[in-house]
Length: 317
Image (cartoon, rainbow, N blue to C red):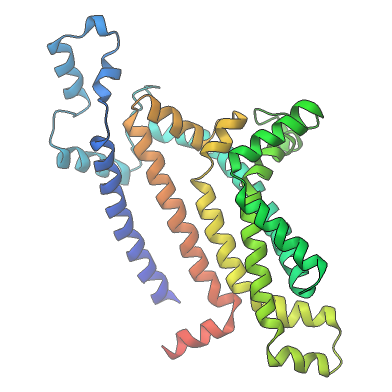
């Protein structure tokens, strides 16, 4: 386990280095010049002013030198200064991060609980009306874009019925849960469908195995068989899928945060792109890469703990 963790750590460092280089290079290959934003009033633009701005932000240096300066600062926690807000990029991200984490955490609870429950129900009732209804419902849910669902939820539950607020985060735990319910549902519905389908498939495969038949023949109750011999053995793929979905959500809240007016990482990224705020864009994209790598690494480390067969294969290897 320790050797595997060290290998994963080295792989993460290499991936992070390559990703940071690609992110930095892609930003400066994109159309637009941040100098035009930094200079300010176009009427006061002079060659001397432009040269001074480029020198102040090291924009007159070669690209590889700029990357070296940025990477060195990022290692020490200095992600630069925002062009738009004129404040440290790290502070901006730390300010916006709790909102995104709260939204993703709420959505994660929803798609995990309801996705696994629906998938297990469909697997147990294979071939029946319940199975058909769950399959049809999850297929429909997976086909609806999150921003379309968000607008529909706002129109029905926010405007017409007035049950939920449609913007902001609220105050206190209950207020935040109330405000984030509609965004979390919109964010999680497609993922819920994926988790439900994976749970149904893996449990259906387990139900056909010989040890399940033997357990039933020995007189063990059906509920006990499903919990101990079916669901437990199906947890590996389900947990893996839940982790991958969560990792993608950490960087995929842009549309939901924009629609519901949530001041999170996604809305910060949209504003930074619109104003050519390159330091913020680079830092947010780097955060997305790190978040994905951390979650996927945790999945790899936890998976052997859930499935003894994986542990045994690793020991033999």
